[in-house]
Amino acid sequence: MNEIEINQKWFTPLFNATQINNRIDELAAEMNTTLRHQNPLFVVVLGGAYIFAADLLRKITVAHEVTFVKINSYHGTKSSGKINLSLSPAIALQGRHVIFIEDIIDSGLSMEFLLAYGTTFKPLTQQVVTLLFKPKALKTTIVPNWVGFEIEPAFVLGYGLDFDEKGRNLPHIYVETEPIK
Image 1 (cartoon, rainbow, N blue to C red):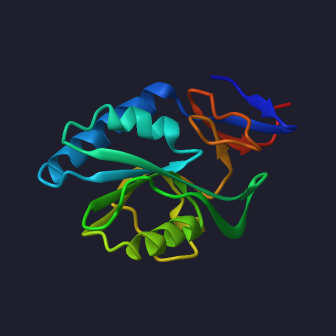
Image 2: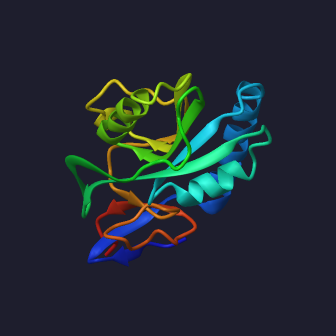
């Protein structure tokens, strides 16, 4: 893993594919124990969480269902603060144990929006699993139930996270940095 350049910005490695996979194994083991009697409905937040969700859900051994939502709030490397829902869940949330799968919780505004949205459908419970969590960047009181990695408030990409739709395919997670000279 070396430094990479995307859209004239530089990124250095933060977590490699092995570290990510090992942490997902741990999360799945915790979740399988906690959720063993719930038949949860996983709601994958598109576009960034699809890779994390695919890897995590292959390791979830309890009976479950999966649906998707799509929201948008980023422009470039900054959150716009305005959240748009462009895809609603195809499976009813009512009376279900709902678990949102998110790639990253930064300000918390997107997850706050989704939890408020989900509440309108009267689920039994709502929980959150996120690969990355930036507690120092929070502007809400959101506390995820499961966290892959806590990170500092810097821009990251790879493993589903993008910079203007670039970098999602990278198997590692990178953090924005100054170029090495």
